[in-house]
Image (spheres, rainbow, N blue to C red):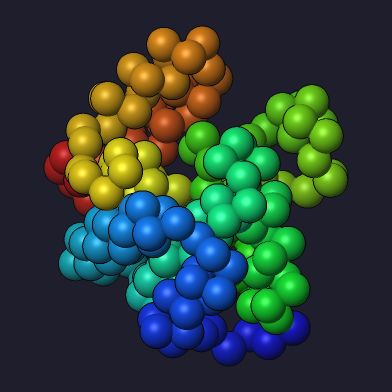
Amino acid sequence: MSEKLPSREQALQLLRENQCPVKVIKHCKAVTKIALETANALKEKGLKIDFELVEIGALLHDIGRSKTHTVQHAVVGAELAKSAGLPESVISMIKRHVGGGITAREAEELGWPKDVYAPITLEEKIVSYADKLIEDSKRVPVEITIQKLSNELKQDAAERVRKLHEEMANLIGDDP
């Protein structure tokens, strides 16, 4: 397993090689744009951000959607990333981006391997957050995502996304 990140073009090629639908690739590019904007805003506040990791992690966060469109895409994507020899930092980002994070109890209920499925690093949080601001490939207010999760009776996930939004807003100092 290498710690060397693929280039942007190599990441996009990996999505294509795994037969990711064009719609998913567009979504990943849109998430990447927001993630990099967020990373830049955080850098301006004096925080140290690995921009390359944010970019590659955001591009590849939904690689698992090449096989499934369920929440399982996080675990499937992490496996695909591992098989491709991607760095652990990218694998972690892929498995930790869904729903503002998945708790150990929820992961167990889903039958996932024991692991951490909630974003920990600032880069993981940036990608997870950016993903919640993109519906298909269009930017939406975070409240829309929170409301959608609430409507689907996913109150815990809605609350985690709200907390992630608060954390980002507090770090940036205004509405991200």
